[in-house]
Amino acid sequence: MSHLMNTYGRLPVAFSHGEGSWLFDLAGKRYLDALSGIAVTTLGHNHPKLVKAVSEQAARVIHTSNLYGIPLQEALADRLAELASMDEVFFCNSGAEANEAAIKLARLYGHGRGIAEPAIVVMEQSFHGRTLATLSATGNKKVQVGFEPLVSGFVRVPFDDLAALQAAVTGRNDIVAILVEPVQGEGGIRVAHQAYLQALRSLCDERQWLLMFDEVQCGIGRTGKWFGHQNAGIKPDVMTLAKGLGSGVPIGACLAAGRATSTFKPGNHGSTFGGNPLACAAALATLAVVEEEGLLSNALVVGDLIRSTLAKALEGVSGVVDIRGAGLMIGVELDRSCGALVTQALEAGFLINVTADKVVRLLPPLNFSTADAATLVEGLAALIREFLAAQ
Ligand SMILES: *Cc1c(COP(=O)(O)O)cnc(C)c1O
Figure 1 (tube, rainbow, N blue to C red):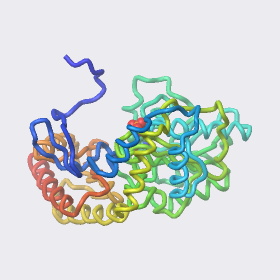
Figure 2: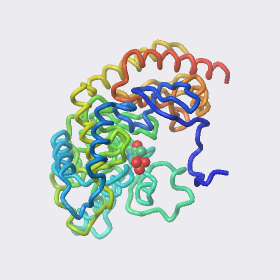
Figure 3: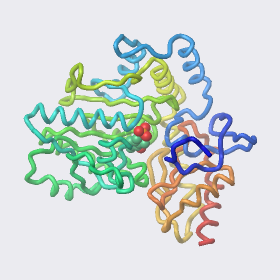
Figure 4: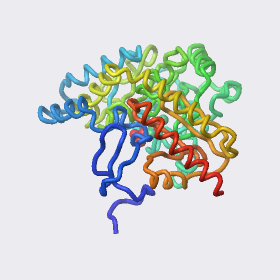
């Protein structure tokens, strides 16, 4: 019997090593990785520049402490602030922690404005993590059940629906922030309309609320821009990052700009591991390779290619409801539960995922090639056709 706590339904496979977009199991069978460990391995597996940066840093120093200066953390904060046009960064180790930081920052900001019980607007079908505050912010009952009492102070509204949001906040004077994923990941690859995000920006400016984007999944080049919200030409007050930032080495970040800047003071927040030299070296290498190898445009081009060729290959197939996404964040919605497709794909040598019950989710590494894309589309289209025909 396994001594692991039973928190995951695991697939019957384990991997020995990876090379680019491919993973090899213990028996030597290879799999095309169209999931990247859930949007984590930005550069694929074993990228020589990442391996070099991480191993050289490991040999030099892995961890010191945030009690001391960490030059690599300063350099990474500079780089992220530059890419996002934001002012400051707090480093942590995961998406949930990044969102915890954002939620705490919003509450502190509210208290600073004399609001005793600040509230944050959150979305239906959202996902923000598994800690108590972030699961309370999450718009999925399955994530919350059994963990009540939930953390209070969240006002839930339908995603991508401005009128519903305006109605929900009318007459309230306790709102301090809106927390939203520019592209909902776990919720089924739902892309917010640009006009909606722009309207949220105006609303937050009018009311002096913080516009907080959870870019844990859609950030770091995934949508073809460094950050998903940049597709709408606007800027948040707070942004959270994690998954793809270290290309597999755990690191999260909470960025602040404008009226959110300088909210935390020493003693308000912290993290023992957050932004240690090893994690920062991995993140700096990831950002450098994304830039040097033109991976933003690759994500856009290969993402469009996958969506268009998949649409062609599945044309007229009844049961396919929608093929959508942005860059290499792709969802194929079917008209029925399709969790079984994950195992069928595994047997056929493809790593994919199903989220929100009916949506096949693809999150390939940002350096996925057009040849990998053709292999994926051919294999996946056949699997989906077979799956739908067998039902
Ligand atoms: C995965 C995810 C999180 C949680 O990240 P962890 O690193 O698992 O804590 C938060 N927000 C979004 C949008 C995510 O996709």
